[in-house]
Amino acid sequence: MKAIMLMFDSLNRRHLPPYGCDWTQAPNFHRLAERTATFDNSYVCSMPCMPARRDLHSGRPNFLHTDWSPLQPWDDSVPEMLRDSGVSSHLITDHYHYLEDGGGGYHQRYSTYQFIRGQEGDPWVGQVAPPTPPANINGKGRDQDWVNRQFFQTEEDYPQTQTFKGGLDFLERNHAEDRWFLQIETFDPHEPFCSPERFQSLYKQAGEEPIFDWPAYDDVKETPEEVERARANYAALLTQCDENLGRILDTMDRHNMWEDTMLIVCTDHGFLLGEHNRWAKNLPTMWNEIAHTPFFVWDPRFPDAAGERREALVQPAIDLGPTLLTFFDLEATPDMTGGDLAPVMEKDQSIREDAIFGYFGMPVHYTDGRYVYMREPVDSEQSCHLYSSVPSNFRSRWSPNDWETAELVEPLPFSKGYPVLRRDAKKRLKAPENGEPNHRLFDLESDPFQADPLQSPSVEEHILDRMKILMEEAHAPEEIMKRYGFAITS
Image (tube, rainbow, N blue to C red; front, side, top):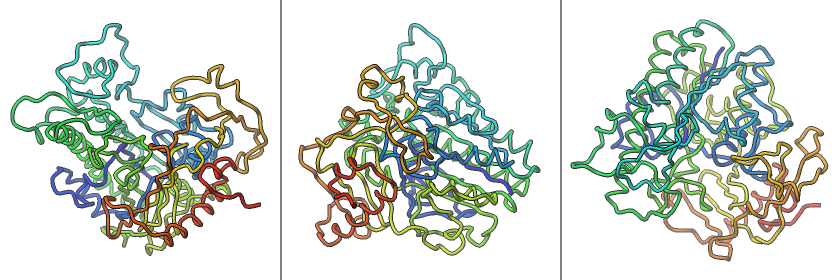
């Protein structure tokens, strides 16, 4: 048995044909849905990029204890567990955050790995004086991005193309071998929405227009025409992703890999493209365009699931680890809170009643598949801490100020006896936007676009009971429980 995980970044489910979109050109996603089970209630867990990947390795949420961080000494790592059991695990990726301080310790857990350079602000090509960018209205453009783009002269030069080329090369050389796991991971369609002209031409408007493929993480301040330009650029990049997806499907067809190879197609999170008058992610309110993700699985043990929909609530970030382990006849560890997806694939049998998700320090979100509840901090003055034993931030080492508040504390319930460094997190915490908590409840059955918050004290009371249980099961620190207004159970 073998498994392929194809992971995109910032894939918005509402722009995919299997989820109802009728204007993006993505025929291979439609073809994918015919060969796999399509999940209708897939949600994120820890956010954003590296927290989601830490969940993938460890099979448990980490957003209640820290933010963007390296893999910790006590974290279970599914690729490492596969490797150590004799299942070859290979990573091919252009996701450059693995190469930063806050991405340490991840890729070394695989048997082998290959990096493709040049995405976004990847410090790839050394050029002291950056080029003058063309006329553009990019709100978040970076000089390094314009340096990197100079080297994308043909489609073969683009990092996404090279990433898929590496993955396809692995499949051609190893398709007849047994017991391997391949993770093909592309940064696209993450911003900037930069793609070859062939794809852009499918969506271009009449006349010359300024480039707008990297909106700021902010409110929408652009004109409706500019918003449409950004969406068109996203769609063009999505179509490029779709074409490369088709190359994977073609390879599986050609080598008849469907009989013994699991295929997982997923994303770390979605992306706001002007919905709710916002761009991107990393904002307190995690709307469904960010949190409710596309997810497709083919499992050769359950061939009847091909072309079917699955309604059970899942969280790929924490469920895929246990699923892959059991697929290769291994056992999930006691610290993993995710579940094996086999019952969902076989009979659409639920593996969880509900779920929590979020960013560290921002609102904690809850869903049971029907309701989504966003709970802001009740006591924003409550002191809180980051728990990490690897002294690295997102793009830097710990500063002297970070070390001033650091102390070695007793092991966490899941840190396998390792003592843990704890430091003050005040600078990482965000108070409610308007000073007072603005908890919001949405009924997706009657309000799928989350336009009208629901007032239902009885539903909210039930959700609060469940949130408390879920946070306790994840071993949320006492100060985090207090921050969100939950009494501590003695």
